[in-house]
Length: 425
Image (tube, rainbow, N blue to C red; front, side):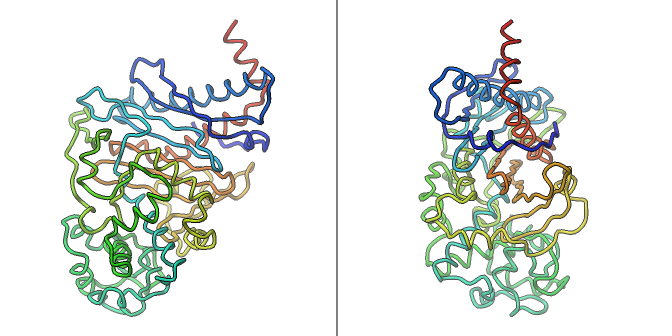
């Protein structure tokens, strides 16, 4: 479903945080979800009825979407959370934590989120900029003496590594990162690679260079990245199941296991230790959609005591254009352009109804987990979807779930009442 419609302000103002569980009637896979849509305080029965009808409509639409994917074997399982303003309006789990077990995914199930972790690294850096401990234009060489490029080493800044514009070729030494080689060692080997442009000029996605931001945070705080992110982000936002290490993940009782498709069937595979040893900033965060909902509330401007709005704007400010049209997000309906900020992608869209709109976005893929997060600033809306399989569905899940939310909330009261009465008859 790809429906793009404008949403009347009266409906967008009718959202709050009232939760209740839903169990799917679909016999394919049990579903555990919770949803919240609230209307202005009214005591009459009609308003209560309308509230319930909108809740049920959105529940049914999203449940149908994911159950269809499970039936078609596109996914093993998934979890989704949707935030509007400061309210969590939807959370749900679908399918199995493991294809060989009966345990179902819930909103508390923990996944690896891969490169969606980069958004956390950008924010964590920003927090230390607010505190005066870091500067976006600080030279990498000043923090990591072993860092050396083939040219212009002294010009590469913290902003450059966070925006993938250090001048290194695409995915330089990602293999070494995944093998657990020390970042200081990798930093000294960059000089053996010919640069593709001056710092700040060319977008070229990195894991090794990006991960240096995490090492810098450790240097200036004297603490491990795990300690710092827990104190500065997880604890203030009450992200109680979020973590950044292998041991905590595998000891979690409610965990989604990664899968790969073999001979047409999904099979669970082992959880590996890649990115936990040396590159948490690039891909080492673990979280549930409950955690991600709290994260999105913060990204939408709440919890301003954690980081200043001005610094948030800097993080979301485009630094370099992502050229070409081959990326999956560049094929989304209405796509005009894509840029990269500091740990985040910034997309511009245009259509006849909404005009030009922005999306703050990132995807992740690690150890056969797949993740997507998107923030829609003009709508005060956030969507996160986590998968425990490397599914093609992830390429379009954000615009499709976004369309479902907008379509449901755009239904006039009269129409939704008539529909419910027709079902009763």
